[in-house]
Amino acid sequence: MAEEDANWRIWLAAAQAGDRRAYGALLAAALPWLRARARGRWPTATLSDIEDIVQETLLALHRSLALYQPPRPVAPFLFGIMKLRGAEVRRQRHRHAARETILDDVPVTSQALRTNPDQDAAVDQAAMQAAIGRLSPRDQEILDMLKLRELSLLEAAAVSGLSVTALKVGTFRAIRRLRRAMGVEDVE
Amino acid sequence: MSNERLIAALADELSPVRRAPAPGHLTMSWLAVTVPILALVTLMMGPRPALLSLLLRPGFALDEALALLTAIAAAYAAFCAGRPDQPGWKLLLPVGAMALWLGVLGRQCLLLSVSTQGGALRLHVDAMCVPAIAVAGIAPAVAMVWLLRRSPMFRTAHACLCGALAAAALAECTLRLFHGSDSFLTLLVWQMGSVVLFTLAVGAVGRAALGRARSGRTVSYAGS
Image (cartoon, rainbow over all chains, first blue to last red):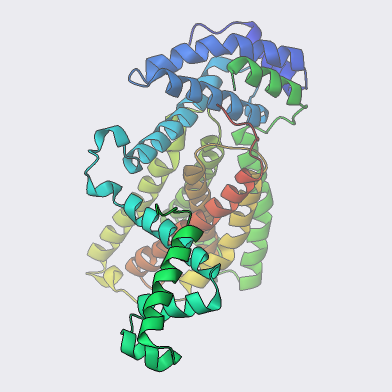
């Protein structure tokens, strides 16, 4: 830790007393030093990881200003904070990495992507129910009997009191109106 | 957020801070608060008969001194654990003190069992130890958590475990002033077992209490 500037102790003690200029000067002077120490301690870390560790160190220093005891050297104080916070950041990264899946590595036929068709089906079903809700009560009743409850034409005729022919025509018209309600234009 | 903007934001937000006392000073404060309370607990529970002559016996005095040493070492380590610039060996001080304490107790137990032809190895149920340690240890534990909460800190788990051990060791030191044990094995199993139980329980509770205090003091900057 021989790289410590003699001013650091003065600046940090002044920062404890509320001197913002001294604090800013200390943080600016310590930034490249912290970056170099972080690279030395975690040589395999990416550049963004190093920057995150440095920023976490600055934030932890801000929270821990009261812990510095002048005239102790500042470098071991800063390095101690960086070691502890950096290890925590690295642990969090490893934990997150274990839970993440990079999609580029998954073939499009993979079962891991199975949720998409299910989601599409759910969306289609919701759209159809909304469209049925916009039809006349008679159309809704015919579709309910013949398409949702899947009654036969004779059973539906017995329940509704309509003739089989009327049910056939009614079904044809109700489906046409339903397609229109869902935005499908039939070619005549 | 860029580093330059972060530095500017932190400097803008700076307000004067009250310097945290040194770990040695905090340890003395902890002892100053807890020792009178434990003396009062001993008086209330009724000191053992012939306590003075007991304290003059080298074996008993050594046990008490080692329990006190463990308590002080653990308290000091607890306060050092929160400081980022404290060396690792200070955090391991209570391990050495505790090992020495247990070693001396074990040696005494062994010697006594040889001289009494196994008499010291009789194990009796001494259910009084657990509540007695809890009663004697509650004030040191509360004082420890209160002192640890006063400043932001690192290595919370280590600090809490050491702090709980300090409270338990001091409680055990006090317990032997008002409660004796039938045999050395009873002392080792029930009293030291209570110390371990108390340390683990208070360590977990203290960690939760400190965790809540820490999350309340989090600075709201997001590094991006």
